View 1 (cartoon, rainbow, N blue to C red):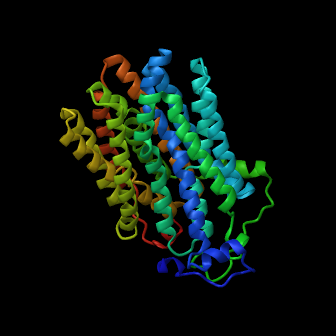
View 2 (cartoon, rainbow, N blue to C red):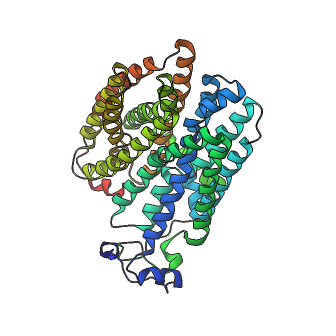
Length: 441
């Protein structure tokens, strides 16, 4: 607890009773906002991951093919990433608290509506569009906004924690979803998700604040109040700004290298493993609850791996880190088809692959910051969109492969080869001599 008060500075204006109560316990209110944001992002991510246990139940109840269900879920992945660059503008325009409440309510509306769906088009609308839009507002751009506004010191740690919440949330609750789905049906399993959404909404309403000045504080570690961004632009102009930034960034070869490698990252993580691992294990006679437990373990090891990657990113060349991350991930994906999916082999895969799940995020963020300066946050939003395009392609492609060949295994060979290609592609980026801009990350 003592470490939390380092960097706390005199208030720029009178503090509020809420901030005073935490300050009396030696806690800067920024850490409270981080905790609420962590929960919000984790719950939003759990809505992204929940369909991983729904493919089988939906197939049995409605008779839809794996490819059809996967296509609907692929739309969710696309919107989860596409919203990011525009979410940054809306967060600045309307505030973190309002956008978080809107996003959580939108996700809940999509989940509730799915209880009464009768056609495939409704699955596309509710889980593809509605849930996809809602979760997009709770993705990594939200974490970057909170870290930037509330922290000067330890910003990297905060970014690492909030990045880990996304990947961890996508798989952490899957065992509970799977157990409830098998025992009581998939609708009751989604009831747990609704309860989590309600809890997150309540805490956002009670504890979330948009800026440190709202509770009479400076950002953690700041010595003076930050300059306020001008609000002269209309909301429409704010939404056009990310498109302008994309036009500028797309003229850079570095953008396309980062976009392409993150495309491969998404295809080989959330698109393939997160969406289909439960179904893959089912082909080998492994119970859904057991397979979901593997995904939860991958999420736990990812939490360690992502934070550790942030620590390494501060100390080593990000290109070499990405090289090894993609090589090791590729080898783990190539290894799995040669196993008999026994306990020892799956445990080895879970640990090895889990540590590398989203370890690519911190070095990718740093490389974007070094090359795109003040526009790095919006540019990373577009790079993250590449990640989600890869997720969508792999989610649909793996399902289609399963329908055609009655096995998922060819996809693992393709995914492993893509990772090895990404490992070599990162060296198309030249090393930046000045590392000062990396602090922005």
